Image 1 (tube, helix red, strand yellow):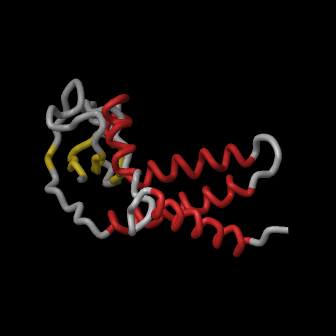
Image 2: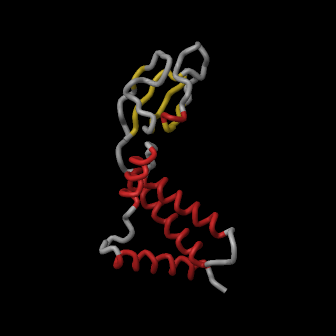
Image 3: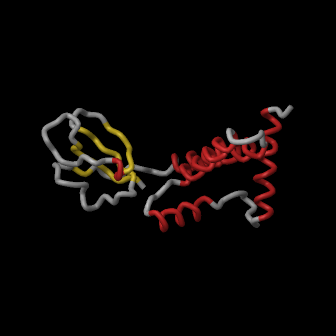
Length: 154
């Protein structure tokens, strides 16, 4: 029987082995290059955290296919830890871009690219953070859900 502690220890060992294999003393750090290549191919920008989360989900799916393989759980634990690390690093970065008033139009503002993350304020006072590509409604109709201001997050 494999315990949770053994899975986590194996995940840590895998990360240390990869650090030696790829000559990176700080360990597995391939996600930045991976998401840059993914964006170049698809035009879709992922954060480093989302890249690691994608890999963790891949391992979760694989864990349900075929026979038990400890590797799926060990790698999944490592990827989820890397996602948490990336989230923590980026949470410290300032995101206080200035708010830009928005009075509507037929599409997104020209300074907002489809792959960017934006924070929006709606007429009803609510705010949310979204990928701009997920916001199909930028025009104004007087509805309480109209976007009245936005800022691009880095």
